[in-house]
Amino acid sequence: MHALAEVAYSKLHIPLAITGAQDFIKDKDHLFIISNGHPILTKVTGAGCLLSSVCAAFLAISDDVALALTDAISYYGVAAEVAASKQQHPGSFQMAFLDQLYAIDGSVVQAKQRIIRS
Ligand SMILES: Nc1ncnc2c1ncn2[C@@H]1O[C@H](COP(=O)(O)OP(=O)(O)OP(=O)(O)O)[C@@H](O)[C@H]1O
Ligand SMILES: Cc1ncsc1CCO
Image (tube, rainbow, N blue to C red; front, side, top):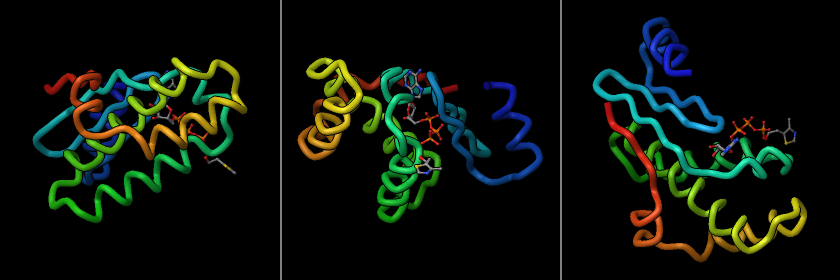
C-alpha cells in the first residue's frame, strides 16, 4: 500500500488517500499513515462511501487536502473504535458507529489517533 501510494502519486500528481487496515494519504510534501479503525467496518455496507462523504465535509473547510483527509479518516477510525468497544455485531455496530460520529469530539480523536508522518 505504501508503494501503491507512491506510484499512484507519481502518475496522478494529485493528493490521494488509499484506505484499508491502514490508510495512506499522499501529497507532494507528505505521506501520512493512519492505523485507526476496526475490522468490523468491512462488515458494514457503505463504510467506504460514508467515509467519502466525511472526507468531503472536512475538505470543504480546509485549504490543505492531505491534512483534511488525514483529519477526516482518523476521526472516522476513532469513532469506529469507540463504537466497536460498545457493540460487537455488525447491525448494532452500525447504529453505534453513527452515534459516535455524532458524539466524539476533537479531544477524543486527539487522544486516540495513531498517525505516522513521513
Ligand atoms: N481491517 C481494517 N481494520 C481497521 N480499519 C479498517 C479495516 N478495513 C477498513 N478499515 C477502515 O474502514 C474505512 C473504510 O475503508 P475501506 O477500505 O473498507 O473502504 P471501501 O473498501 O472503499 O468500502 P466499501 O466496501 O464501502 O466500498 C476506512 O476508515 C478504513 O480505515
Ligand atoms: C457499491 C455500493 N453500493 C452501496 S454501498 C456501496 C459501496 C460504497 O461504500
